[in-house]
Image (cartoon, rainbow, N blue to C red):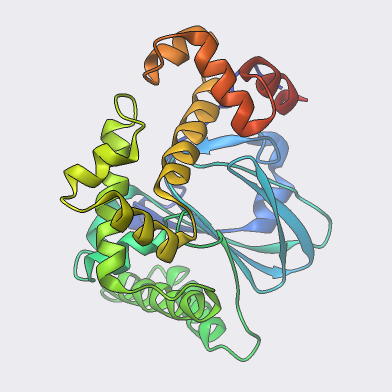
Length: 292
């Protein structure tokens, strides 16, 4: 394995509908040795991906955890997530790949809280299991059929509309399977919190800072986080920082001391202690273990 876990950019095979593509999983399996990087090795996405498994059983690697998959499983992969396929025999399906630009344009008419939920790994499991009786299968087959019909009149608009319907069907299933139904007002506040966190985490790891920025109490912020994802605000902050640290460690030759300063730690030793407390490993050992 290479020293760095590579980024994978969007390189469409079909330029007629740039930004959106449906790729059979069997095609990836058969040509895995021709891909750079090999899809069975960890890599970081520069696009969005929905993986629909139609046959077999196995597992998928997502942001440093393995998740079981089977016939009827849908894997949500957001831009920047680390993932790897376990290309076990008998596992088959499709990858629905699309860019951030396509994501923004295609879902521009949907409510903000709906769009926020779509590919937010904090809000639900990245794997959704489709019930056998769901009409999701019919809509997917129709989307796949029209995608492969290059002579289709008004093709882009038809594909975009079918994809929005498919995503909406998925969200309905996901909400039904969720252990914590989401109140939209709480989701909006949580979205504002995570947006602030993304831009301020290197300077502020104190939940009180974010509560003040949101003009709510620390207690209210904690309640929001617990209701939405069953974590405290401090847990959300810590988990986010650790995830950024892991992604940085595997994608660069940065020393842990350099990364410590980038993440806002004044003393590299404190960062090492923080990382080990949260993961059980030092940054160096984490990188070594993953490469094995």
